[in-house]
Length: 147
Length: 147
Image (tube, rainbow over all chains, first blue to last red; front, side):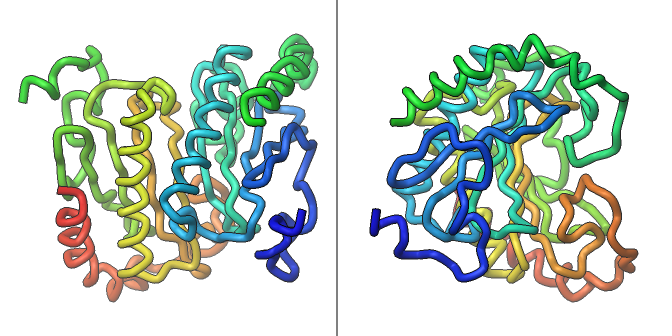
């Protein structure tokens, strides 16, 4: 696993922890599922080595990362049938390259605002129980597609 | 221009307008600069044909789009030296594929929150006057890089 340790940044949380519930990890990247009561279909694709910006990666790695992201998005669409998928690489708080993949639904807490925007409606966590029952199969499909 | 007209979606604003201040347009995509008083270095890369999700594009188009996005990000970094760049494809309101490229600064209105989050501080628009003076050169560099 030495290869994973070459570019750790002291003090960077995503260099030393998975950063959430680990779905899969390979030599380049990992996928975690965010355990969010309001957003069941919320994954992050995290680059293993420390890089702050998308353009800190060489082209081949950017293509690899975005095709991994596309696989996650495709599987999220196939399994959860969201109204829209939101993709974002922000990293203002933790500047270690990671992409959010968020299944959005017309009746979720913030739709059509971004999940970081103002609340549009209150939604009971139990509203998503049926969808949560689908997540194990989705996790397994993501693991199979990226390993 | 027939090729651009094949996949228009009735009622979609980004199928019939540029969607902002046009920096460049080629057969596949265009770049607009968002005229935002709080965010001078805010661009959008908009796919010309109507597609809602990133994974509605075939692989070759996804790679082309993301490499265009990388060129815009690189030039934004080179010209404006932001604290962080934020990339996002949301499209909840206008589900026509477009990517936000936003130069973020530690002293901007929402940092470290996303620009859609809660205000962290009030910043006079004049604070960014010096940066606005750099935008013409940045626009021209983007145009040259993508045409």
